Image 1 (cartoon, rainbow, N blue to C red):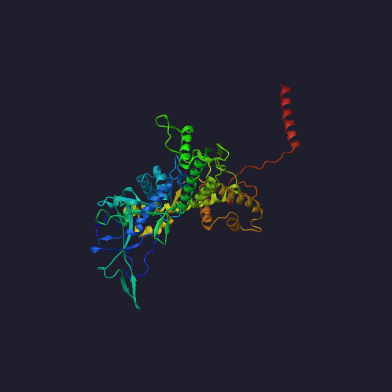
Image 2 (cartoon, helix red, strand yellow):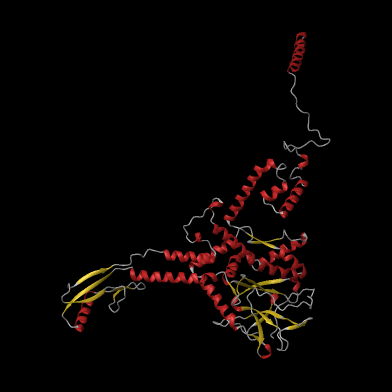
Length: 553
């Protein structure tokens, strides 16, 4: 076989050789298990399925040029990738990761470095759009073979038409495609596979065949390529599909309807005249000659040349949109001119609107977004259409699937730089999430109203807490808080009390809300009302002494 390019990441703990399974790995990526054949098994025959996959990707890209499809794609991409002046479209979320703050800090730094390497903040819209249209995304992770501990040096995008993922069965001298493990009862087949990529600069068009390994194509190891698919697979043909697959028929129908509508309007729009020419008793040949003479006499076809601005007389051609000349024999009504009316229902677009809505339904975009004049309602959630909420969930699933690319980047970078081991990563990857900027006003309004309703119910039920309802019941059933949220909120409240941000509930009067006096703390004497008679006597005595002193002087 041709030399394998790239690097591979292997676990330090090798799996036991006693593990036997007659069933190969789940084929979720739509790749067939191709068996090596030919002279010394030097190439892989992938002619069948991948030729069709090549044509399928080209069809997806042609569909994206259709105006309605392009608008729907832009709606999806704009909802999934939200650009902001200050924030990045995506950040790594490590709140659920059970690791030290030092590890979390390194993970955030490496993720920020990977985004800068692929220039994701600037090209996020184009990257997500290419993945959504093609249904797959390939990136080559470039490293320094002499210093792999420095991590990924560059991330380069690969056109899906130039690379194929191959899973090839291992054979032992072409005798047995299986490695059989002897069990107590019988021989159990345990197939082994080599997984790699075939890359070529120029795919064979139109078949889309990738060149043979070592003959114009390069074998690249599996760990050197980041491969992210849409998750949609045609199980009957083992082919990865795009989200545009469902809209192929709808696009073709809409195109045919629009083309037929244009042809119909061009043919039926003008009013045409019918000339009945009286030819008397002339023979057929002479009657036709006479009719042509009359036509040439009265017919004057002026043609305008838009390029040169010239107007010329063209008498050679007669189209279906011009007037009709018909002979009439003696005994008829003589020469007559009538008018053939044009189409009467040229303004009806019901069928076009139907197929436009069908196209949007196939693409998963709400029908309300078809018309540019349709309003954008930011009212209550009761006024929000259900398809908008479904669209929000659809975009969330797209983000989850697209985030597999970041997961693979981060895995390679952390392992190469010895921040984590492959075993540690297998435990950590499920707890690493990616936070995309959100710009769906409908979902935000829905959450805001739900929170308002819960707080209103809390205010209503608060007098009965401790009498008919427990605090735990209120938090779980009224506020809809999970056990994890309750634990986190309690820890945050305790931390804020220790920091002095919140007052200690034990030091606050539950009735008045005023702080209780602490031991050894003087809050001042309680003011009391003085005796008015005593106050008056004090004033009188002071005045008497003053008057007496002034009299003596």
